[in-house]
Image (cartoon, rainbow, N blue to C red; front, side, top):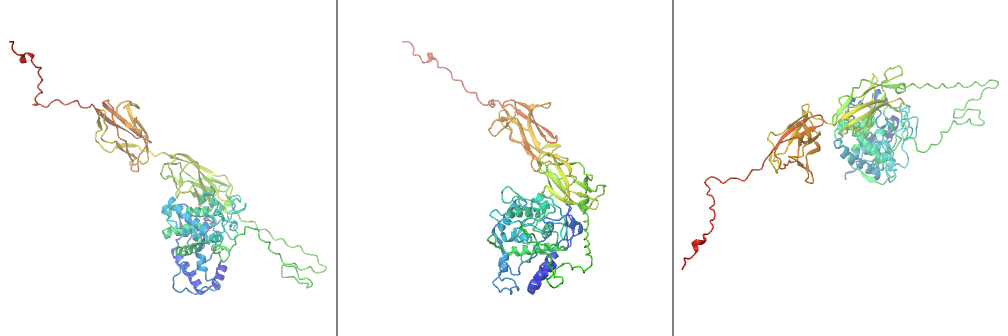
Length: 602
């Protein structure tokens, strides 16, 4: 890597060197110190990450090689003022060309930003960050060489991660993604290693597949990967952490930050397949040897040593052996001993053991109080440190690890123990499984059982003390409202049922007295499927009364055993009122006297 960058600086103008130093200095000043978060991941503070990081958590890419081209000095949107002299050996249009992002690739980045804006709005993921990583990892999918669906026209593969200058990651996908059944390689435009893609993969173009070679799928997966753990990428500290989690190198961090700043100043769309390609081979992270991504087609064999020049009797420029002297017997060549590979910590793991995990239970919506602890051991029962343990949530559940993912990878410490991130219960109740396996080695996994119980309340009280009364045939003026608590805390989203019961000792439904109405106006005396709100409150619909008078009971019950019985009183309708005192009674009409109107006889 150093030799490659050195050639670039020697061939460039002094301004290029100054810009590179300025970018590195600025970015380095913002890089975080070495920290360990509560998920067992470590962030490096220099270009040589700690050995436990290099051996354990290899990021999204397995810390594979990446392209080290720096952004041009001239802005993507240059001002009208005269520009500096172009760098020697660099095309004048380099700035404009570098600012161009292939149309399909750019569309994938922007769609991923929009999707994350809805799924994880607090992350504040800018599409320019995906563009910066895509530039460094694959040169924007090799200049946008993708088909209409966004799939690369040929595979983009990193070198096999066999420990020879790179991380050692043995095969985890049986060659399904990288075509290598011995070791893993980074795959696709965003260079995911198969073991990371297994849980981080997403379907970004809606074709029902999660393909690391598809720029829509890869960009969306990269966005979710960068947004895990509740990081807010609008803050410098979290932005640095997210980039370092992708490839654990400060050199990588500085390079991505410089491209991010460049793309933020302006960019434009160019046709697919016409994007600017990196000017040199990808280089490894600090401390790694430069590597070249293999071509999708087999390369020509390397020529062997040149034979001796005929007629000269002298060895050629190759390594041809010198003919033996006359009369002597040829000495057989000494075979070169094949070194026995030193087993890695992962190679020594024989089995996994539980390391004191308590019973895993939580109420829906709560964080599990206990965390899973798993110990990696040799056949002799000795603890093995620096081994990656992958925890996967299995079953019909919406419970996740903190950060919203259902898979987490943690490196064992010196005592061989890996502690999984905390579990966050969803709304689905029931039992599910968390499986722990060793990454890079086939040993029997270890299963843990966990359960999510329904939200509960142990107390119900009315929020008002006003008596609930109504005249027969009328409606109650006040609504019934109650508050639910559990161990003194607000009990939100707790299921409840309200029933008009026959008596305190008979919980059967009363067929007389007060009642509710359904959506069609029909009489109902049991309401199921009720739920308290975020403040633990439950307000019942309006109550009505039939012609039956007396005292009636409304019973409300919740999950968890809370019960409240409320009295309802129905009185008789008032009778017609009597005349007020002093009011004269109506005078009865007298019938006419026929004799009074008769004339005397003549």
